[in-house]
Each structure stands twice: as structure tokens, then as C-alpha cells.
Length: 369
Image 1 (cartoon, helix red, strand yellow):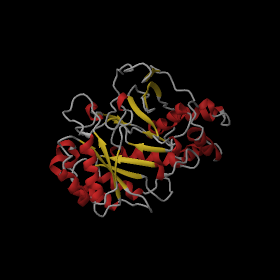
Image 2: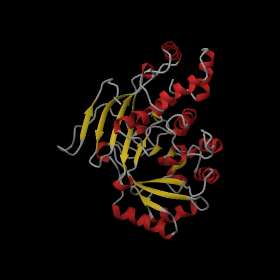
Image 3: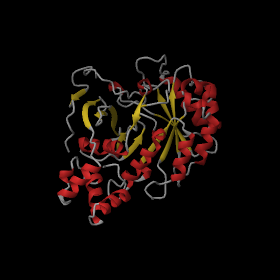
Image 4: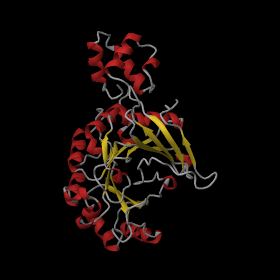
């Protein structure tokens, strides 16, 4: 039900013999009020509510575990209607005066792309999330936070552009003025490098008719195909040159840039030679680079470079005129940082009294607004 676009709701309402205005009413209940049951749609006739529920049942997420890190980051583990586990992450701004709240959103159960440095890849691919399950993460997380996120980043579990149809449907729902009304400038879609998906997203521009595409982030992580082939198998299909050409084609409105994420892996992609190659690769692309110290998890034989090496890498890029930032790990003490989401069935207890909080809500208990 929550995945229906306004035109689809209008067609269903018409087929049900109800007045056309009921479609807007229902949409506002689903995406403005974010109701969890059709019974909460109090100005919609009970018979119409029941018919809608029979034809298109609601599939609400249920919150299973909430973990709070020392820095205030919260990891939310959800259960889907068929019992799958996915995770979202609420990240408060380090600068309290800006009052920003970012939500990291998942698009799939697991992931099919097998990036060697990412915990989600160890799960393999489960299934795509429906558009309703994608937007539910935003609505339920907002209820838990007591406020709406200022920024949405599709950087959680899964490759968003592998689930393109449900992703763009979810964006249309989130951007619609009858509902949450998010600006595409406040939404970032991250990809490991699906060139075909980047081109489709570029062609779609604003899926809600607002005239601009969401922000694009590309997980680059290497300056040679040899290294990227090894750590990101998708590079064998779309090598670096093809990926960067797609970035150059991506439509950017005034002042916007493509973000290149660069996970720093000690002894793999952090050499001076890498730093010197990167500016040339990005030439001609309005861009910025986020250096991400690798966030570890059990299994792969990677290490995080020393802080001095990361700073030296940054300085070489700056000297070449690249806008570059070091992203401080957020929530890494609860495995909530970039590349750590794996929806583990067992969650460790807090490491020290008062430092971390773990709340086991489930199993199968719904969130409360």
C-alpha cells in the first residue's frame, strides 16, 4: 500500500467507485501522517479502508534492536514482514549548532556486489526491498528520533542502483508534496559503480518532477583498475574510465558536485602514487572526495592506515586543488559506521557501563509513534 504512487492510488480509488479526492487523503495518511494501520485513517470510510487493505496490505517494519553509540549515533535493526533483518543508522551532526540529523537508509537485504572491504557483502544477496520498505525506514526512524532527518543518504545495506525501480519509486514518494516533501538536494544516492544505473538516474532527473536529480556519491576506492578489480569486482564490468565518464554525464545543478568516497585501506590504495593519480582521474568533474578510514570487521585482511598517512594523502590532494575531507567514523563502536552494516543476529552487550546502550525491542514488536 505504502509503495503506491499518487497516480496508482487515484486509479485504484476510481476503480473502487470512490470520489477522486480520496486518493490524496489516503496518500497523506500514508506519507504525511505515516500511519501504521488503515484504522488510523479516520476520515476515510471504513469500507474503503478495508478494501484498500485487502488489495494492498500494509507491510510495516518492526524494530528489533536499537543501539546507541558513544557519539550519539543510533543503529536501528528492523524486521521486514517476512522476517528479514535490515539496518538504518541515525547520525546526529557533530556540530550541534547546525542541528542536522542524517539517516543512512538500506535498499536491499544483503548485497550482491561483493566489495571485499564491506561487511554487508559477507551476507550475500537476500532480496530487494520494496519502495514501501525503503520509505518505512525514514518514517519509523523519524518517529523514534522525535524529529525528521534533515538529510537522507542511501548508503546502508545493498546497492541502491541494483534496486533501481524501487529506489526511484521511493524517491518519488519521499519527494511528493502531499507527503514528506523532501528536496532532492537533501537526498544522496551512493553507488559502487553501476554505470547503467547512474545513466538511468541521470535521465530520470527528478523522479517527483522537481527538476533535479538527487545527489550522487560514487564509491571509488582505487586509482588503478588492477586494485579496483581486486577490492570491487564490479570494476571488471565497468572499469574506472567508464565509471568516471558516467559521472561526467550526470546532471548537476548550480553549486552541486559528485561525491567520491574513498575507503582508505592500508598498503592497498593509500600510497603517494595513488594520491597523485587521483586528481587527474577526477579532472573535469565538479567533485569532492571523502576519505574514509576503513572500518574493520571480522574476516578481511585489511587494516586502517595510520592517521598520519591519511592526513598526508589528504594534503597531497589539497595541493593538487581537490576538495577533500576526512570522514570521522561515526558509530563504529556499535558496528554502525560506513561498511559495517551486517544485521548480525546477535548483538554484543555494551562494552562499558554508560558508554553504549542496546535496547532489544523485539522480537516482532512494532515501533510506537
